[in-house]
Image (cartoon, rainbow, N blue to C red; front, side, top):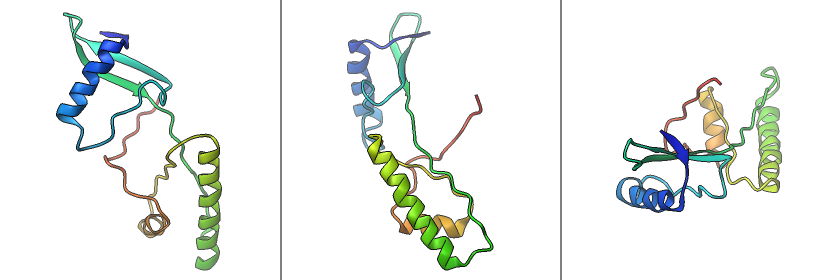
Length: 125
């Protein structure tokens, strides 16, 4: 059953994190970085899981593939800086890019992007 997060839930969530997840990612800041946080409890009202919906920023670019490699490279560099400025100005800590082209993936990795800690998944709403 879904229920409102309590201080007790947050404390238990920290224990769950320390036991199962501390080597995989940082403990989420459920109180400040999420649009909504909720708990799932069992029939005995014991916390089973806690989750939150966090906004993420995604940079989306369309590039004219007929332009020179040099022009495309500089354009991506400039767009990246504009995206980083936008993210920073709005107090976001990450900027995501979903790349399907292996060449541009290498370019983005050289420009400071890194692989996500887990595989990215999406669900349509």
